Length: 222
Image (tube, rainbow, N blue to C red; front, top):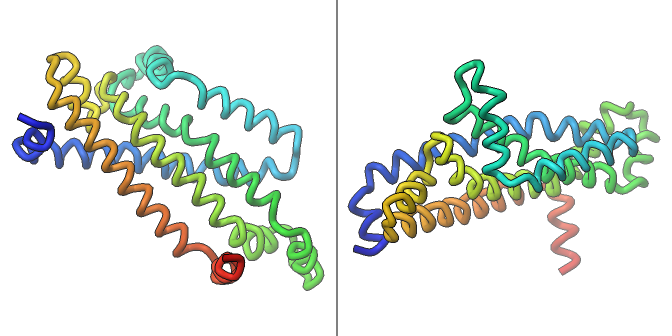
């Protein structure tokens, strides 16, 4: 029986685990976005702090996922959350910080200075400049960072099955333990398809939320 036959023969479990996988990734990306974007904006005001924050996020990013899940175990075990979805979500939030913070930082820093000065010239204060000028212009790059984090987390979340988080990684984990090639391949295919779907969806969202002026500018350059 091939991988696709396995998927069709276990469609109920496939749907359940896919929704579980999406839930884990969605919650982690939401939390990472709510924390990463403000941090990325804040560090644009201090270059020394920016380098420390980015270096710290880079260290977390290079930590093997299974090791980070392992670190969560003794930290959360005293409150009964050493295994399951909670440590998985926390680890994924930490992994997501670098692309989101870095892209936000770069996007805000690279806003055209003449546009910022024009905003100041018409009387906008720092907060108004941020909300009405810098963030809208930075939107495409910020969303690109969120998209990268989401696609990356889909793959990493598959490993979270080893700490009882569920998701499509369950097929891969159980397939390895049973030496069941079709199950392993089915899990891998489903994770890949989910990543492709999310990447496409985020690309469309990025285009939709990009200000019309930037879209027109890109079209004129082509």
